[in-house]
Amino acid sequence: MGHSPSDTLRVSEVRFSPATRADRAAGLMGWITFVLNGALKIDSVTLRRTRDGRLTLSYPSRRDRRGHEHFVIAPLGDEARVEIEKQVLAALDAEVAS
Image (cartoon, rainbow, N blue to C red; front, side, top):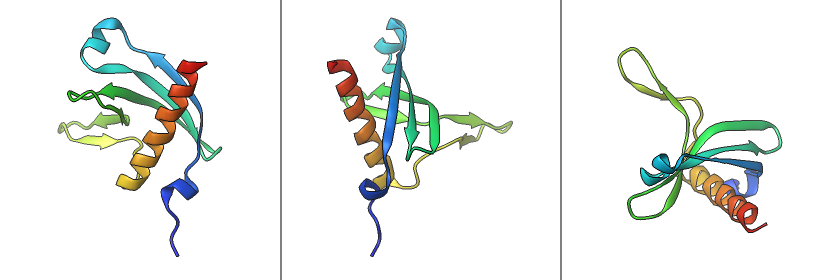
């Protein structure tokens, strides 16, 4: 029997650094750092607002000499992406509420 990402992924120590007003107007809300499973620090994840108003995470990438994008770190699959996003956004809500 397989494990679901909600059974195995634990996000903690979520920190948020807001973007400038101009960046926020363009949809970039800020940058997020968090710890995954108490063992891996994930840094430079951006929080973006989509055109339809939804908040989403974007993971850091770099471009090679040919212009191809390579993600430095990214979830393996949609289920993991959704679970990490859910936990990070919940932690941000708690941070803003406190």
